[in-house]
Image 1: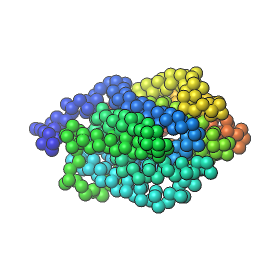
Image 2 (image 1 turned 30 degrees about the horizontal axis):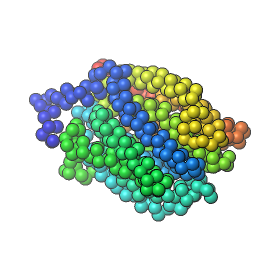
Image 3 (image 1 turned 90 degrees about the vertical axis):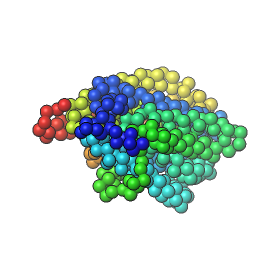
Image 4 (image 1 turned 180 degrees about the vertical axis):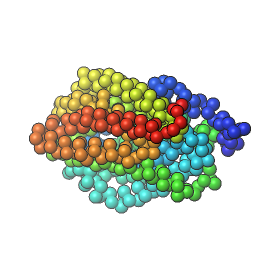
Length: 468
């Protein structure tokens, strides 16, 4: 495999530029490049949406709304595992894309190998620490008398399988960094299909109920991780890990953490806001938490669209930043915002019209349906705006400027969303509280896009050579 990569550099020319994946990053029309890299991810993520919805649907078939609420309460634990994965995945992926743009294949390979090592170390820490503080975690998640046992069962299994959850998430990011989007989606799709197949077997056939859902989730992630490992081992990837790079360098670790730690803090802040949201909702009854959880799962349909386009645009921005092609970066940003916002408007309209029917798929409780419908119609209003915020944040990460990405999240979560949650909850109650997120995203779209375009233009001015 190393000979295959070494053949990319011959007679002083970079033949790897002829690779289809590199062509999309460097020369494909911006709108087409955004769609080509984003659509496979969105397709894979829609299958993940299907998993989330099917998982929730199966739990709903138990006709136990407290188990439905427990899954929602336990979700921040999964988010925290993904946050730690994000540190390695985002940091390493950003450096790999920039290294490829700067034509430094050795550094790209070394960074990839370091990503593998850090994933193994981080997952071990998460599992050990999580089990040690399990009782405190369950209490902090907001579980009450009727949901504590179910939340504990679900969280324990998720913690035990952290290596697979984190491996599946991180390896997908590493594959995307080199433009291998379809391969990253293959692991995602495989894991999700395994999960969907195993859900009814463990929940009903084995009678494990909520524990069965958690086990199916972990086995699905294990299958996705296995597929990504096979892609690297079989030589289908542009890059591959090597034993000679098993020891990280200080420079690579510094660059990974420089981008990755703020990315992790962003996800942790989001998890903290999610926990505050749940704790406020619990005051209105545990069935309200169940209703909100179903609505948020349906919102994930729209979330995965903007996340897919943002993730697909990240290697585009990183590669062209490494190549100092700032004109192309601005074109990619403009095309991405137009594509994602128009798509999200359609999704928002469909979910708004059919909200009661959609909530009714997962619960027969009139209270859950009524509350969930109102929540869904409100929170769906974020979709035309939040995609631009996500693209701005991931673009800063791709450029190796995490301080701006983290600044966006800090303002968004701590200075806007959480204060609005508390103020609107106090002033207008539950239905006031759920407007906090749409208001936040409207403000942040203007702030984040303005900051990103200004930063790119300032970088362009500082380069003496004409833009390519």
